[in-house]
Image (cartoon, rainbow over the protein chains, first blue to last red):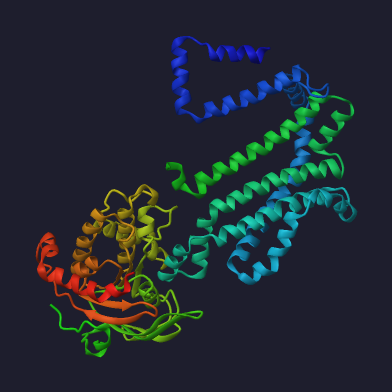
Length: 274
Length: 269
């Protein structure tokens, strides 16, 4: 009940603390983020204590299991293995996907040539194709990287292509009217103006990449985080299994948050002030 | 006030004298598929003067301006600038956009200097030039602001400063004040007249406001719609040394406004 008692402490503090907290809540977004997480974790803790299933651990048990796995090094080793195909696959998808998307956005012929392929790929249930990859590329890093690319690439390509197609035509005219070269038009107008949608596609692609790597680690061969999940499930160590699942969700969330931060702070400085 | 005839069938473009034409439009036609937007436009624009293209919506005035700018290709005909036929945008023409066309990710300073940046002018020099034109349009202190932090009127001042900064002979303004509120528009028109006086450049100005056209123009080209043709050319000959408010009450000014309105009213529904 320790989380519950903490809650009580937050709800009924001394008068001055309450005022300070109210002021903080009005000004800071982080207060609401913390509150949102607190509600989620409390609900989890209560659901675990009911319990809704013997295989559903409480939040605190999961947290303890996570700490144990970090301390004994198994979590670090697992992430080291999982991050290899993930980082490789996402990097290839990002570079190739944005390049292909921009080329498709700039040229009608390239759009006609490439768009149907990626529309079919995006519509296809990729999980069904992952086992096929093992027939061709075995069970190593190549197969797992391919699984990540298969999930991440189509969404990045299609979003980049749409981003370029929706660039403000007036800005392109402006660049032409000042005799900008095609190269200047692409790098000084089209890419910066497309950046918000480009980044939205990249965020979706990274999220899809996480799905891809988990599919690969659960469907091809258990390694890394997928191995932790599979192993702890098989020995009925449910708290450890949930801790492994939660850790990959947390890693995905943090990665997306970092991307968002990079976009607003590096790519579009004017957004910081609004 | 003016010597030209009113009715379109009596009007002969050849009777209009233009000294030292900097831009000549010769037999420009424009078709969009089966739609005829412009038919046989012949016009000359005098150096150092402000000429307005005025007409109801659908008369092709913006299309004609974009053809002169080289942004839209003509179906047939020629555009001659400083004696040379042009097929695309060139350094002797600069465009001011109706929707401002400012880069939202760039500061006022970078936006104003963008034409120079594209030409490869070093940063020091282009910032110096940009600052001087930012001052000229009355935006000192806003150099490091982003477009979304400015009002509509201030954004168009940025667009005008950018066009001035490349030092083109001809400035093409596409309804530059249509997205600006009424109070600011009047101030803008007065500022524009001051800039015309100071910069000694040729201005080609598109508007659908008769009052605005009469107030700022040395010459008004009336276009009729579907397809766009030149229906009349009027020289308002307003005495601009007078106080702006007196000009707007001057009987001569009001007569020209009325005359143009009578010429255009049968196009209005």
